[in-house]
Amino acid sequence: MIELQQVNKFFGDTPAVLDFSLVVEEGELCCLIGPSGCGKTTTLKMINRMIETTSGSIRVGGRGITELKPHELRRSMGYVIQSIGLFPHMTVMENICVVPRLFKWERGRAKSRAMELLELFDMPPDRFKDKYPRELSGGQAQRIGVARALAGDPDILLMDEPFGALDPISRANLQRQFLRIQSELHKTVVFVTHDVDEAVRLASRIGLMQDGRIVQADSPERMLSLPRNDFVERFIGSERSLKRLSRLRVQDAMRAASGSDSSFRGVEGSDVPASDCFSASGNPNAISSPHGKSGEEDPGPVLDSGSDLRLALALLLQHGRQRLPVRDENGRIQGELRLLDLLGV
Amino acid sequence: MSVKQAQSLGKLILLPALFGLLISSTSVWEILLRPAFPHLENLVYSRAPLWELVVQHANMVAVSSTLATLVGTGLGVFVTRSRGREFLPVVNSLVSMGQTFPPVAVLAVSVPMVGFGYKPTIIALFLYGLLPIVRNTISGLESVGPEIHEAAQGMGLTAVQTLFRVEVPLALHVIMAGIRTSVVINIGTATIGATIGAGGLGVPIIAGLNSDNPAFILQGAVLSGLFAILVDAGMNRAERGAVPSAQE
Image (cartoon, rainbow over all chains, first blue to last red; front, side, top):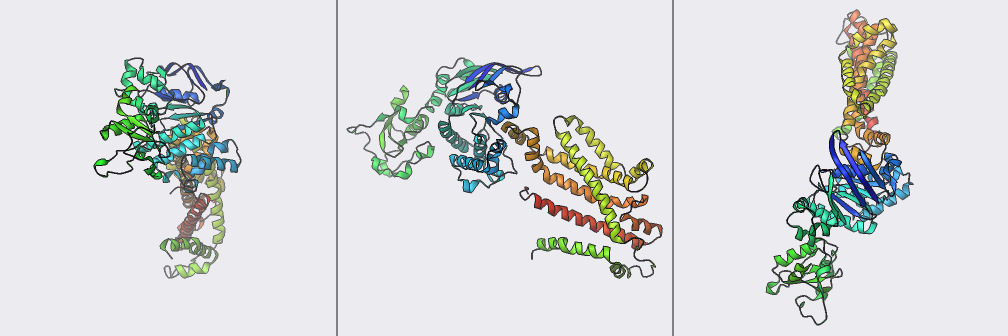
């Protein structure tokens, strides 16, 4: 748990963060968003004392952060930055093992931890562990950046626009992967971003900042449906109803199949090859049309129950359908999603 | 055998062999120089064996370069820390001045203070060799990007750990290049030691100038030149052996 109480930060006479209070609960993923210069990065860096507060108190796990030496405090938190900062003279393995080595773990333990993390990020250790950072793509490098931050198994993860420099596809992949990993590890995460979509997709809570103050701190759903003032509404943008859909899964809005229902004749679940279904965990490309474009009886695509409703809406519109069938992770048809039902969510 | 292999073989075996031959045998010089100077009476410098002059020379260079390396890297590290950063401009200009000050002038100034011979030569060589080491240490350490520093700090490395585990390994290549430059310069400059009785390969050069004997001058010049090339190649090799993963 991270508690910030009436934190202020001045650079000279210039205020950067003003009267900032926020509690990030255990296991919560809290996104700090806001326009450039609103103080979100400053706030993040005050938590691990990369920047010292001017006044106010910050407590982590019940202890004031000034009770520890700065470097000891930082070792207990993972830290990920946009520019990644992998050490170019170390291999992937050595980079991940930096913090375990600081903790003086024995070599075998550090190594197996690194292997485990590489697996977690879908990077086969045999292929990646001996590579140097310059041999990695941006997305791969940032995966190692996050893995390195997790290596010492910290309870807290501080992330400063970690996916900001990546292309949209790598970014979406990393976000999904990170969500999956977070749902396994339940770290307490403070995540700075200026990208509303990213915040909506990842956060369990969003803190929106303006001019050093927190304007609204709420769940993404509440923030999208009940923006506190004009600034929040403008910042979130006019598409907020669409953004809300991206928080919801197909399975939340679909109608389950019943034996007598005749509406899914177009597709027989048993026909769907397993290979089409493996990525129900959310690859947007996973929504495929199993029968291809076979003439006029094209049954349209099949939705994955785990993908988000924004994507489902796009597919409904794209194919001009009122309804589309939905399958589960095993490729079995589970039910259908109706366009009209989306108006109700 | 590739050109590269041939070159490294030349540096590894042929040059040292040639150098060894030239400092141990006077007859080689006779063979080489006699056709050029058929009427010269004393063709080979003989008041001291050449190898002894090489040892004196090497001693002066080793001592002054070791001192310059210790002080130079230390200064470079100090002025790139947050505590020492305010001294960066001062150190930069002081060291540049050390370079513009001719070594002969240093000798002239230091002889009255410490006497003739070995000591003033070491002082001059030390001052003269400082600049490339300090400059390269600073630029090597400064080339470590801010994101690397931020990551190191954020992960909880202390300042000392950051220096030795991250900054120095990344800057080593550049720092070593500075040390090599300094040593090579010093090998050439050390010949002035002979003017104040410090010995070394400058001795035949000075003797040659005094007695109008170009063969003596050639001996001193060729040997100190060869010596510099050998040491440079050797240090280069040692460096590559020590940091196999140094980035290209």
